[in-house]
Image (cartoon, rainbow, N blue to C red):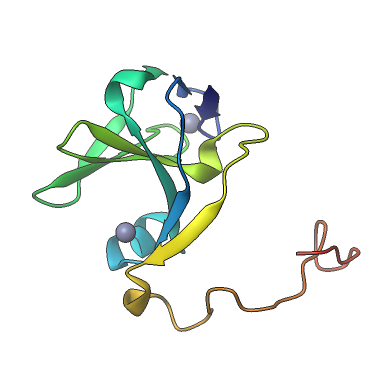
Length: 132
Ligand SMILES: [Zn+2]
Ligand SMILES: [Zn+2]
């Protein structure tokens, strides 16, 4: 079981399904809506209980994206097949999940590379570095 929420807390959800690996999507739509790229994990809709009013944006013929109308957090990508993709960053606490692949990588921004070794600061850039 996992809980998730938006930044302001107006939308919360609980998912009871076993979650698989997280996929990173670098497509143009995910870039625009997140400001970088999306990392998401699929779950059957009937295993997800949402509280709060999700605002939906129909981003293509086949899918819509759900976000919090108050704080703007991007929470859900739904293809019309009974699955919802939960944005992994909105899951609360330890998830026990791993990201295992990148899709639409050809569409990524040119300012980063997947798996690139970069310094990792515990908090801000003025603080200590920690292991990636
Ligand atoms: Zn919110
Ligand atoms: Zn995408």
